[in-house]
Image 1 (spheres, rainbow, N blue to C red):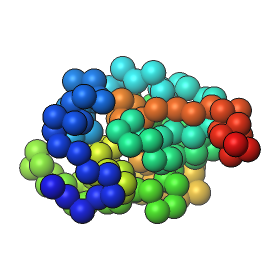
Image 2: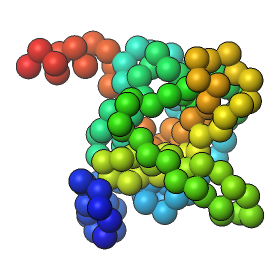
Image 3: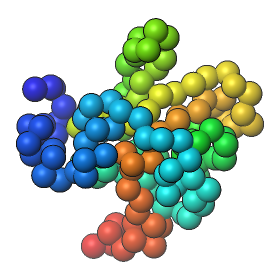
Length: 142
């Protein structure tokens, strides 16, 4: 097991995730480009981890990178951690949920996007679930 606050066995993860979510979040897979329901999605709200529901990205940081996956220029402070990924014979920076260790995707820098950070968090949409801003407001009042 890991040192993440949310810890589950593979069997427990399989009980709460779809097979594709398990493959991406727990086995560091990648969804096919262009298949995420969050490509071209622009509603106001928060994107949470599909595994543990931790808020990861605000919709205000999402941008159209036309890369095949949802893109954000920064995560919610303290919600995401990075790791060096040397799989497939290349060096990349992997991003994971700091609460459960779920694989989100990779972050790329210096690509020239007109964003405040010049970073692109290239995120598997299947790793995310969305809470609309009006739902978020209801929850904070409760």
